[in-house]
Length: 107
Picture 1 (tube, rainbow, N blue to C red):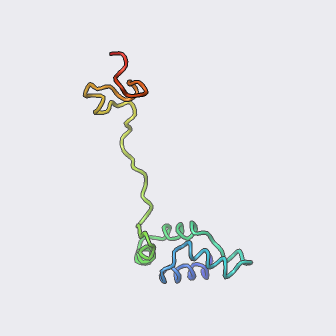
Picture 2 (cartoon, helix red, strand yellow):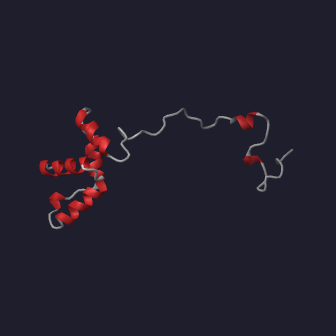
C-alpha cells in the first residue's frame, strides 16, 4: 500500500473513523485519482495482515467492533449419520411423522 495512503488510514482510524467512512472521504476528496482510493475491505485486510504487536493492537482497538482477528468457523466433529438424543429415546423423529405431526407413521 502507498505510504501516504497508509498514513491517511492510520490517522483517520485513530480519530475514530470507520474503514467505510475513510473510504467515502477518500472518494470525495480525490474523485479522479484512483491511486488514492481503496475499499473498506482492503483497509480491514491491511489491519489484520499486520504483524502482532503494539501497532496492530492499537489500530484494532480503534475499530468499533475491536475483534483481534477474524474468528474461524467451528471445527467440530462430523455429526452426519449420528442418532440424536431425541431419536434414541424411542420417539419418532420429524421425518417419520405425517406432515401434520399427528402421530408417527407405521405404528
